[in-house]
Amino acid sequence: MGYEEFLRTLARAGLSIRAFAELIAMNPNSVSNYARSGEVPDKLAIIAALVAEMSVQQLDFRSVIASVELTAKKPRGGSRAGHFGGDRQVPLDLDQ
Image (cartoon, rainbow, N blue to C red; front, side):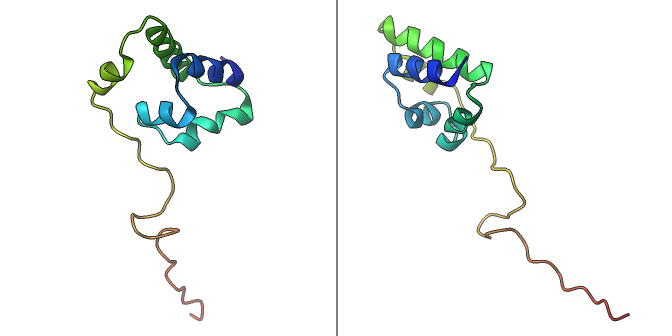
């Protein structure tokens, strides 16, 4: 699904990118980053299409999704929690 179609699908459900991302336990920036490539992964497209159709049919998709225990993904990168940029490099003794 193209990104523009994805936005139209979310609009049918009455959702913004931020609301959709929070609904499925994703970072809103991760969802909006797909605008660069112009394509949305199939899994997100399917979720958006189902949510939009449920909304059109006046079914409560929020309670259905809330009933699933979602766990947010860990952010990628080498930093530790509370430490910007990870651990500092140990000084190297190059005078040996």
